[in-house]
Length: 273
Image (cartoon, rainbow, N blue to C red; front, top):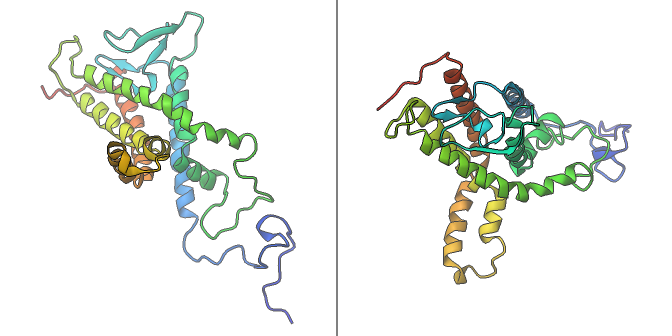
């Protein structure tokens, strides 16, 4: 007698012969597709914007503000920034945008981040698209094969992300100057860069790798009270890692866009003092 739960014809993946014989793809009645769709849309928008700005090679410096996409500037073809992060490591042979030399490190850090993995796995690859919803792939190998096995280098990207955040902090300090490089001034751009670097630090420090480095391998917390206290602080930030990931992603794009508006002459930076 038919029961309506006969296994489908597919015999691979979640519908393999060793798995439970459930006919429907899922039993959810809510809008489970909304979250991965919004995630994919948000990440795609950032990819499009950052690609445009990275290859633009223009309007990224308006004294004393520099776009976080172009700092530090490692090529000879960078705009001169008085007192700024001009490190001409790459000579005149580099003819492309200098942003391409530095963005690989913060983007690599985010691309391999545990939260972002979940986000784009669900949003773009439907692996799986949502909880209790079967993925459409015939087999699942996880991060055991190429290229996803490269996700394991996340901890090494963390070591690069920290000095980059430090350089962006230095840029904020330099932003307390005016267009003539005189100290003791603050504009709206200073506030924009300050908020951005605070969010970047919060996202970086809340990283799982940072939490592990601080206290992940300690056997006796009582013997390391300072590291235990730091581990607790990072742990509380880690609980908000997803929120900080999105907030810092939006803030770095807004900071770059603000510098672009000022540098292109489309907007005059208001000064507070």
